[in-house]
Amino acid sequence: MLRVLCLALCGLLTHAWAEPGALLRLGMDIMNHEVQSAMDESHILEKMAAEAGKKRPGVKPIKGITDMKVKDVKLPVITLNFTPGVGIFQCVSTGMTITGKSFIGKNMEIIVVVNITATNRILQNEETGLPTFKSEGCEVILVSVKTNLPSNMMPNVINKFLDSTLHKVLPGLMCPAIDAVLLYVNRKWANLNAPMPIGQMGTVKYILTSMPTTTASYIQVDFSPVVQQQGGNAIQLADAGEAPEFPEDYVEGSSQLLLSAALLTAELALLQKSFDLNTQDRRAGKLPSQTTKTLAGFIPEVAEAYPKPRPLVTRVRINKAPKVTMETGESLLHLHGTLEMLAARRRRGKAPVSLFLLEVHFKLKIQYSVHENRLQMTTSLDRSLSLSRKSSSIGAFSEKQVTGFIADFLQEAYVPAVNDVLQVGLPLPDFLGMNYNLAELDIIKNALVMDLKLD
Image: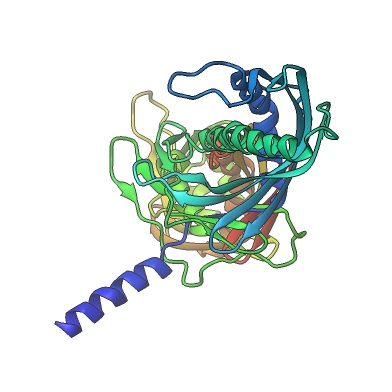
């Protein structure tokens, strides 16, 4: 039994280690921006102030004060600090004026400055699987109090009245504001694990691997993205062998998104069939019109078999899933398949004749960018080709004879077709209304890192 348990635990640990995907590091820049935006856009303090003067069922009026109103709520100053293992400690400094009729029959005006503190714990919602913040331990601390009540008259009574009034009014007024702001922030996670299309071929969903973790400098959210074929099975992310990690040289407090090469590989696997290509007798880039005469310049035997030029038909078939690799500063798209050259028949409707069939392995250099919040790729040919002749109807020839010819064809005709396919873009995690278009991109070992920037 012990051996079975050990094997099970080892299997789980291996699975967790070998599960590359995406990592999100939320620094204080984004968290400050989101909490401040939520506070501003929700106008929550003003709403709470408006509610304070209303009579609510089941709530007893405060003894000694009538017609209570809250006005002149000051613009809040928000201070956040990460609490390792928990979430964020939040302090909201604000001020307001409380008015009403006092127990001595005069119009009362109390000007207060307060600090509202709470711990915002980050959790994983059990129902939705989404990150969520929940406030705990809300306290309202009086910083200063000024009043128009005659403090020189019955000071003990007045002070007791103020103390009792403020401790009754403020927590019920201010602490719900913290909860309301967090609700506003939590809504911005709502679309995170919704399936996002990759062209017409499938979708990707960003699913949390585990509970988000908090350090003294950031909150990290780990994803196990699910890449799904349209109406088909999920594509497993390959084990990259070495789990990618964030570099340590980013500015303190900044935020980053890391996308593993394994994730990009899985997403491009959805597009594999779209990387197949058929061309016939057309100009591509700087290439001349492709005919048997063109090919005869590299393989003389073609001229003997076809003394009169015939249009060339070229078929590229990718028969292995594309693979993305990354080293510092460089990323490559590896494509394995076949390239077949055929001569078109003179009579319409007749199938073209195969001249030769090559097994090919070639690499495309990838440049990354972001457009409309989708990761874009543009490729160019790495000239190191691997060619192996599988069949030939024009006799034996050396692959070296056609290496330059094939490379030119791939660069001028095939690469533009691949770039057209890649224009669909790869979806990025939809969280907190993030605008990725300003992100700075950095290629590291086994991953692409996006240094996120705010508007």
